[in-house]
Amino acid sequence: MDFFSILTLLGGLAMFLYGMQVMGDGLAKVSGGKLEQILENLTSNPLKAVLLGAGVTAVIQSSSATTVMVVGFVNSGIMKLSQAVGVIMGANVGTTATSWILSLAGIESENFFLRLLKPTSFAPVLALIGVVFLLFLKSPKKKDIGTIMVGFAVLMYGMETMSGAVKPLADVPEFTNILLKFSNPLLGVLAGTVLTAIIQSSSASVGILQALCMTGAVHYSVALPIIMGQNIGTCVTALLSAIGANKNAKRAAMVHLYFNLIGTVIFMSLFYLINFAVGFDFMDQAANPAGIAMLHSTFNITATVILLPFSKLLEKLACLTIRDTEADVAASREEQEFMMLESRFLEKPAFAVEQGRNAARRMAEDSHKSLCLAMGLVADYSKEQADRVEKMEGKVDRYEDELGTYLVKLSHKDLSERDSRSVSIMLHCIGDFERISDHAVNIMESAQELHEKGLSFSEKAMEELNVLSRAVEDIVETAYTVFDKQDVKLAESIEPLEEVIDELSKELKRRHVQRLRTGACTIEMGFILSDITTSLERIADHCSNIGVCVTQVREDLYDTHSHLDVMKNDPDTAFFNQLKEVRKEYVLP
Image (cartoon, rainbow, N blue to C red; front, side, top):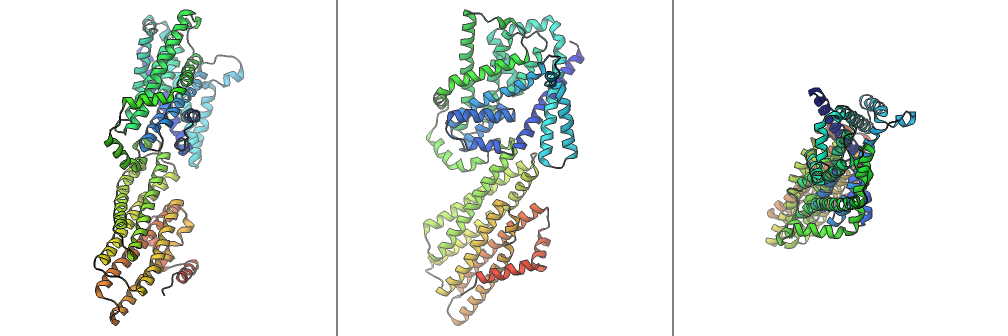
């Protein structure tokens, strides 16, 4: 094997790994985060967990990706450790689908239909269709399908290139002698573990082994321990992803390691014991790609069947390895809610966007609750409720910081058009949510001032303030629904209501001045009323920002001021009609 053959081998390996990456990314984008959501909504049924783990892994073509995702789920509290055990076992079974696809490269037949199954026959067709999809179709989903096809074709070309490059090794005695050393089970397991740990993909390392089998120099006695080691090596990815995670997430990674270690020990002990007693004839035969796929599947299915009934013991073993302290329990309760913004989810952008939406919804709910509580304090002050408003505002502030950072990282990922719009809307709107909670605190402070000074608004003033408060609560609910549903049609109802709130605020201040002149109110009360109405008016402005943002992003408009000028200064008949209806609904007594 000369220098140029080595270059060809390295080129084939690069194409193989790149093709696998591209195909996996395309499959993840097409799924749009749905596969991860299925895992998220998992029940505690162990068998269902195994089937779902196998199914998801077979689709995204990576047990490492599934296991890392599971570590993230456990870390964020979305999934319990007991649920994770079954998914991890299923992921090991699902990853065998790749080896069966790659085994098609070993088909040797003159039959036309069988030859069509060879990757060298259908990969060029897939590559051509994929390129047409990528270059000539505008639909983002069809482009993603094109990416999958091109990725698969590149993967198969890489496999063929590797196989061709290593074929001369069959005639190199040194290569054969090295392989003979790997027939020692311990050395074979070590070699498989190291190779897979380096490239961090058991599917890829199995593919490399299948390519080596094309030389005819790899016997089953060599292939078997290497496959066992490959299953152990793939645990490195999950273990690395658990660094910095909470203890439950670390336990999920340890379950993955223990499952493969114990499974390897049991399988190899039984296999070599039977082989010693009976003697398997195939062990000295040259392995082929289909045989490698069979061994890979047999091991993972056998290990799952044997260890599934003992999943609770695996869980306990992981808990014994990584123990909890009282401080850990307290910290986990405090941090749990923000764990949905897991950095591990960024590797699957479609799902990360969904997690961002969930966090933004919670942020919106908290800012809405803080406003409702604050308005209630004006009429009936309570220290406990006032503390709740402050606590919620602090939580909303933290959401703005953490969600903003998360969304900025996410915006640099390869997102679909729909997800890109969602991220853009969230980045613009979370600042408005935070400001609304700030104004809720301002209203709470005004209520606190009234309480501490023993002051109260007149019955008439409270009736007027209640009309304004009702209008503001309605605009907040509408704006949050517009944000959640990205409903451009509903967004049209925000501006007329915002206009009416401005009118109500001015009228409240005018009426207060009249009461001041007659001596029915004091200047001090006027300052407090002005602070409350100003806060309510500004809350309505932020709701207007949310409605405008959703409309702009959905319709690809980016000039906020001109958009509002057109709506308010050059409105159509529909705007005037809505304005009339809203004025009738919010009439001051």
